[in-house]
Length: 466
Image (cartoon, rainbow, N blue to C red; front, side, top):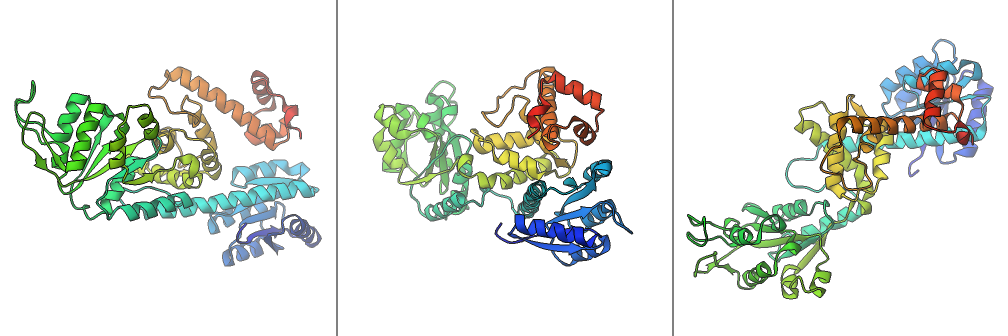
C-alpha cells in the first residue's frame, strides 16, 4: 500500500484487544493500528480520522457490535467491518454480514485466518475508495467527443493527439475494432484550428463502390441513372473542416487511385463532370487492417499509404489499458442510466474487479454493450458480482465478441440460472471451507435444500476444505 491504511480494533477486554493488536502488527506491517475499549470510543475515532477496516467484537456492554456497525456505516461509507464472534453465536455473525459486515472470524482467533481476512478487507476498502473517486471523476466529465482513460498509455496518446491536432497534415489512426478510432478523430478535430468548421465522416466499407465515389466527390445531374440533380460530395461539404475516411483499408483499387489524385492535387472532379474543384479540407483516416501486409499482397497502394500516413496515431486496446476499465464502466453506467432516464446505478468493487480482469476482445464497443445489459437487467441501485456473472453467462460473456442476436428467452434464462447457481454455491463453499451447515446459514437456505443443489450440480464440498 502506498499510504498506510488504518485498522481499528474494538473490544472491551484489554488483554484480548492488545493480543489482537500484536497479531496484526506482526502480520500486517504496513498498516497503522488503533484500538478502542468501547463502541462509543470507536465512533469518536472514526469521526476524527480515516479508518479503513474496523475489527470489532459483537458482544460488548452498552452498545453491541451490530449497533456499532450500523452507526459506523453512517459516518464512513468506505469503512469495511470484520466482526469477532464465538462458535456458539455464529448466527449473530451471519446477521452482521447481512447488515453490511464484510466477514467474521471466530474465537479462539487463529493468526493466519485473521491476517487473511484483514488483508481481503483492506483490499475491499481500497476498491471502495477507488470506486467513490471514479464516481466523482465521472461527475465532472463534460459533453463532447472524448476518450475516457487516465492510464499511462492513454496519457501518452493524449499528448500525441495534442501534438498532431494543430497541423493540417493527414493523420492515419490505427487500432483494433472497437477501440474508439472515430472518437479520437473527433477529438483531433475539436483540438484543431478547424474546430468551428464541419466534421464529416464516411464508413468506407459500408457503401458500395459506385455510390462511394459519388458520396466522396459528388456528381452532376445525369451522371448515372437516378442522378436527377447535382449532388455535393463530402469533400465539398466538409469545406474548411475535417473529413474522416473510416476504415480506409477496405476501399477498392479504383477508389484508391482517385483518392490518391485528390490528396496529391487537392482538387476533386464530381462524377460525370469535366470540371475540377479546389478543396480545403483536412483528411483523417482510420483502419484496423495491417496496411503494410495489404501492400505486400498488392491490395493496397503504397503511394496512397504514404499520403495517408504523414502522421500516425495508434489507439490501444483494452488489454493494454486495464487500469482504465473501472473508470470506463462508471462512465458508461452513468451515461446509460441517463439515456434510459433511470436512477443512477453503482457497481460493487468485486464486480468491478471481475470486469477489469476480462480480456474484452471487442474493446470499448463490447464493454459498452455489456454495461448496457447490466443496466437493463439490474433491479437494485448497485450492480453486484452475481448480476455481472448472470449477464455474462447469457451468451454475452466477456471472452469473445458479443453476438448480435439474443438466444431464446427460456434457453437464456435456464443457462443463466444454472451458471449463477454453480457460481454461488462454489463461492459460499469456498468461504466456509466446505462446511455445508455454515454455508446454509450464510446463504439463507435449509441445509437439506443446499445439499440437493450441491448434488444436482455434482459439486464436491470436500474439495473446498483446504
